[in-house]
Length: 480
Image (cartoon, rainbow, N blue to C red; front, side, top):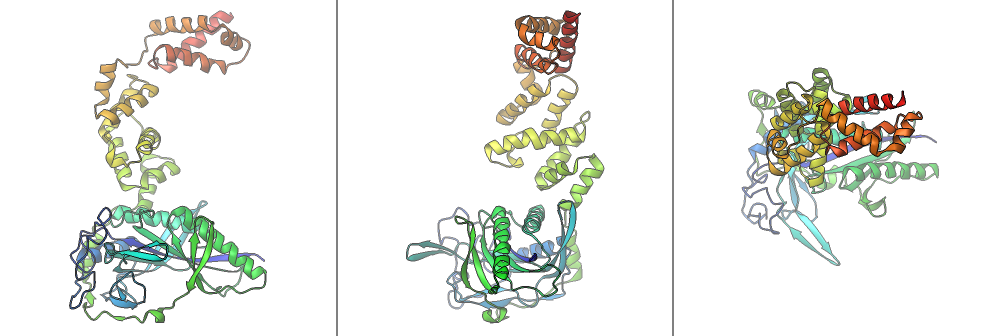
């Protein structure tokens, strides 16, 4: 029987703030020794009271607006009770029935089709401590405990592992654009769970859902969902029943494994947090936050295609990261004689190659957008060729020097003088009689080899177009 996957996603994203959600401890704990970013509040010592982090509330509302959510007039915090040791209070301050943001949507594109994924809610809570298991014992680090955490919950609108992957990529791009979250799943700043069920194609009733946890990378999300869909389909084909449980993804064995029975809302015994007042959200306050929304990735992709004539795939790559998109536009603005697509080619090609080699970001590039534009202008004007320009770009990044200074210092100006090049062309022809004869015998592809010899003799400084024309003329002269 053919089955249809029904998938909902829950994403937890740490909010980038200076302090924790309900206390003044620093939220920048990544490189700190264990249990050094703690205080009586986040350690739940007797007699302490939480206070609300205004910046975290604003970041959550900003996220909700970016996801086309409605922002209710009233919201409150709740206690979510559970027995795990990762919060010393024995409960988590979260939001249950009155979240900050509701009824949103995010559009994604998969295989050329646009899909609308409903956003049920975006709410704010505190993160938990981190457990370290070693044999039969466990250690706990409370540095992360209390860090602001946004939870974004979709409707069950996702229909495949590929759609889930595309949704997460688009959501991460938006969170990064907003400056709300780093999007780094490997470091735990963004974590997700998938609720997966299957039903026969054409059926109305939903199947039994299974929650899949331990998804620590975009790759694992795609693989875990695909595996779980196949597992549930196989159970149904064999006449069995899918159990509503929580499964974990085992990266080593590439399979989901049973963790525990699925908890329901009543298991957490939610009730309003008595130590925090409800929040009344003023329309003027929400409007002021809406003014902070940047142009989001989807709109930027469309504009890059319409305004600059970029290929859709290049626009998508450039718009994925806000800093890269801004770098690109600044370079285009400074490149008087260079087309926008050429600038895009260089950034997605040579610039990205330099960044990959050093495993760094565009912010660490030692070539300004104006510096890249100056280099590309030199190529357009024929001062240097593209091969030399790649070498110069690498040196610009290494030294911080300007393109013109490097070209002048190293004598890299392109050779376009035909008399000078003709002498070098004739030397290449004389030194390579076999390839010359192959060309004369009707193998035009050999011309590339001969051009390479000219480029080699000139240390890459020959104008390749002029060199190719002179070579063809010289070979035609020999032939006749």
